[in-house]
Length: 223
Image (tube, rainbow, N blue to C red; front, side, top):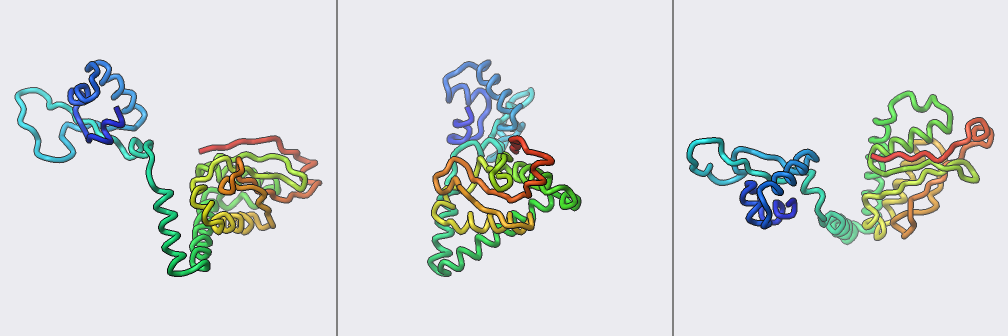
């Protein structure tokens, strides 16, 4: 149903039934489900072209994908981003790519600061890391906090730029630098999804005394 709306354009329920060869009841059941999930929207007027001439009665509703509905289908964003960085590198060299990566890292740092607010720095070291991981989760990184030999490790189970970062590791390096600035301490990136690892793992040092007072258990957050 959604694929038909994407490939063949907006349509009424009756047109969808003809396209897909299914009953009107089945069409409306699928449309109700997609509408409830915010994947499609209905209007009394076609999204383009003149209003068709009809007899009396309410005009047939036309269904179209929402932006969320279109987002469910594959897009070439990774390829576009990689091509853009290749262009930057061709004309500006390695330094230009690094400058772009640092700018992106600074933007991520600013977004995290907005989420964390003003009071989080007054918390204990461990609570600061937990809040930091939760903020990453709010941005869609699907994080967990686990014990590590020298402190705790924050694991990111999702990376929205993994494919591009595999070609341009400056993106991972700048992200790590942003984390260090935000937390005000040295951090160490042990693994990255872009490098073929299962998760992105960043070790954050916390004193043994702090850990003894409040030993962390695995905590997961996701957007």
